[in-house]
Length: 146
Image (cartoon, rainbow, N blue to C red; front, side, top):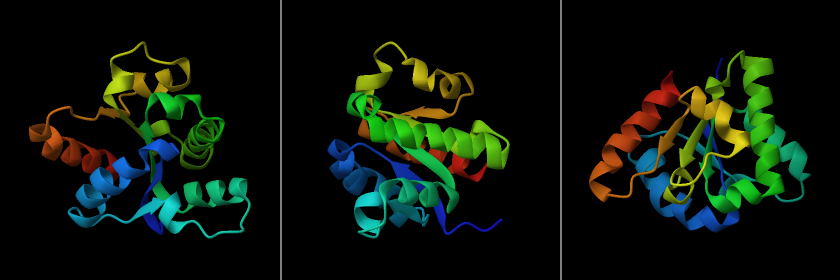
């Protein structure tokens, strides 16, 4: 099946700069993957629920940038749950969802809402050291290709 995007990036508003300065250049520009980023690509005026559902369906994968604020957000919770439903119902697997855990999350107790993806090894810890960025990007690309 052909998808319009390689990945839909789900993130909390506080992580927009992280997405634009870290994820976008390393993944979309350097690795030539097409990302769907809501603050850049959403069309104004379309109901949020409809936009989220079409984003999930038009993307090969959903990549969730998981921070503490992400885990507290009702809209991000909705995106994550709908991504799981899309993965299981329409694609037969939770492999559709990839989590990027920011350091503030992977140093804490794992929240119940993401434990199933952690157990399936569908996550990557975002590196604290810049020397590990290339390995991180390579692993993310490999997970997206699986």
